[in-house]
Amino acid sequence: MDKHRRDESPSGLSDIVEHDGLLGTGLTTRHIEAFGRKVTSTAGHLIGPTGDGNPAHYHNAMADIQRELRRPNTQRRVFALTQTTPTDLVRSKLSTSEIQSRALSSLPDDLLANIPDDSSSYSLFEGFQASQDDIEYRKAHRRRASKSKKLLKDGENRAALPSTPAELKKERDLLSRRMELMGVRKNMCSSEIHDIDNKIANLHNMRKIVLDRLAGLEMEEAELEHERGWTWLDYRSLILTLENSD
Image 1 (cartoon, rainbow, N blue to C red):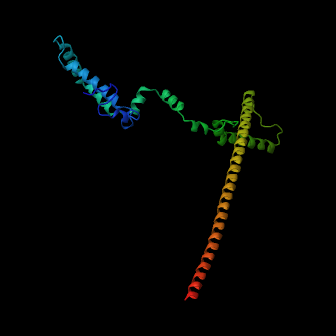
Image 2: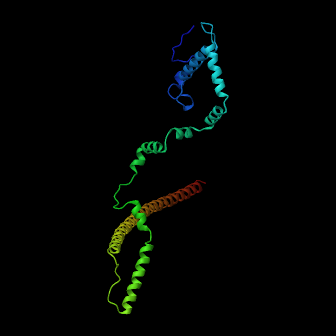
Image 3: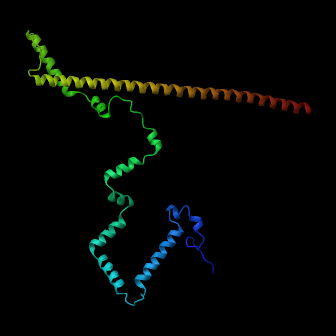
């Protein structure tokens, strides 16, 4: 009787699926055979006769398990577990922060290489704020301008200034903030101009490529015309040769 090693399969399939596994799962026949031996051994100990002839503790354990499985809560948990996808299982075991950390830590190198350099002098939120229209400031500025015009119309020489130091400080902070937003808007305009210049350069390159392709097609057309002319001459010479031979 042939003896097989413990890590080999009698069917001879272990060498075939040793590296790739069954159906791409990573499980080989060696793993399945080991699992089968463990299940057989466990079932033999639980069901088969024992040396002392008193298998009461095994039957008691099986009865406790059966009694536990008959409970509605246990049945619902088992049914929910069978209906749960692996993704839901991972989400139930891992917190949201841990999932985000794992997702960020598993980014491939090609995505990390495509991240642009942080050469901007303003943040994304500052750009969003700068892109919004200053409605409140325009309303306040319109009120102050109308009040100043009214005072000039009435002949008064005093300007429309804030009445308290707190309002004056608030006005100064507002103007400083508007100056910062103006700087952000200028940088945004410069970035847009730079992007437009790059697009124009790309369009010029595309135009040059198309022109080169057109020139190649024209040269190919000229060669075909020349070849067709020589073919016609060869045909005429062949006809004349046949006529002279007759």
